[in-house]
Length: 111
Image (tube, rainbow, N blue to C red):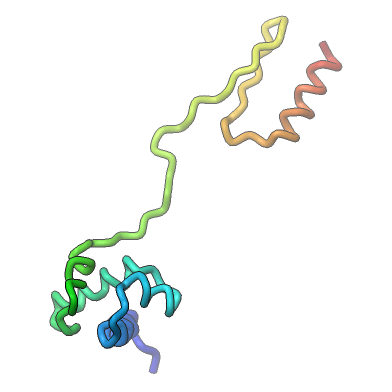
């Protein structure tokens, strides 16, 4: 039967607490995020599923961690290239340089 995420993390936290390693050191050894490890220690401790921390590590588990996806909160204004005869080219800040060069080459030829 497959283990639940809670069971997996409970085992990881138990293994960590049996060492003298910090969350960062232990997490690096097993290939997980140290903040996620500390968060699970905190969750399990609140639910009575983990032993109390040693050597002041409870400070680390008091941090609540939520993984976030980075997003642009305010869209960047576009770059405007004003060409004679009223032609305006607006380019997004995340533009592709090769495509812009081709567009400007076409504008030069037709101007």
